[in-house]
Image (cartoon, rainbow, N blue to C red; front, side, top):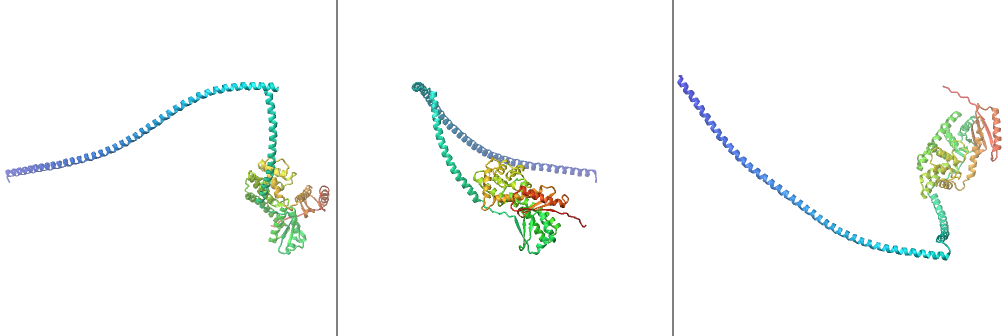
Length: 512
């Protein structure tokens, strides 16, 4: 191919490409312009729509604001109306105050004028009174002061006479009313408390299943019964009474220990001196525990709290003592309930009265023999164990051995008398009987070498146990005679008293 044809072909290609380029460019431009116009049109429409929307919201907000403004204006108008009304009321009150002030000033001026007149009248009356007094003094020959003193003395005497008459009438009426009221309270108190009466005994009957057991209790040559009597301090009477053994001792605690020990020995079947001592020691411990438990149960039943443990133990021991023919614990419980009822009737503290009533006879169950009467000893015990002064005084004064310092004392005294005054109770005889038995034992205990003493057979026999290492056989005879002579010289008793001195030597060994 020649160069010309090649150049012509290249030229044609270039011209064709330029034409295509021009056509493409101008076609895109027209399309772009159309899109632009369409976009402008849409933008204009959207603008108009937004303007309309904003205008609508503006109109809504304007309406709301106008409503709020109208409401506020209405409230302001109402407040203005109220203020105007208050102002009118205040103006009216101010006018009324001014009017009353003027009236008060007028009344004040009138009163001042009247007071001036009264002062003048008063001066005139005083002048006339002085003149009359001078005339009376001249007539009677007495000064005003003397006449006044005489009149006062006359009035005093008259007033004293009338007052004494009134006092006598009131006292007579009070005595009648007080007697009637006291009878009502005592009768009502007795009626409201139900009681039991336990008659004191000095013997306990121990029932057995068959008479064969009696021989085992006596033992070979009587060694078992002697060991039991020596360990418990109780006389054991084994006679022909069928299926019964009598335990005799004035101390109920000893009889109870002997009864329980016998019961355990008979149930167990092993009865010999070593076993007897072991069982008696065990039962004695059980009885001590029972005493404490009884004291606790009594205080809980009566609703009394805060007692010292030793006082609780003493209350428990009352179960095994008698007072004026009654069981002492039952008597103390009855007295406590009576005191509570009577204190309530009189408007006093029933809990304190009940406490004093329960403790009033604690001096009757001492661990050692005191020299004081039981009321004073009980007061000492109560003071020792931190009881309050009014309760201690009530305990000590319930037999008039000290002066009463509180109202609890006469209440306890009266309730003790109500509880103790039971038909058929031989109070003085029982008290003297127990004291005589205690005196017998204490008299024998005062001799050296004596370890235990037991008054048995209602005080007709005194058994004295001495230490084998301290007194020999010859000295036991002398000791028995000395005790008998001292009892004759120092004590009063019915019949005769047998003194038995027991000296026992034991040899103990253990098989291991």
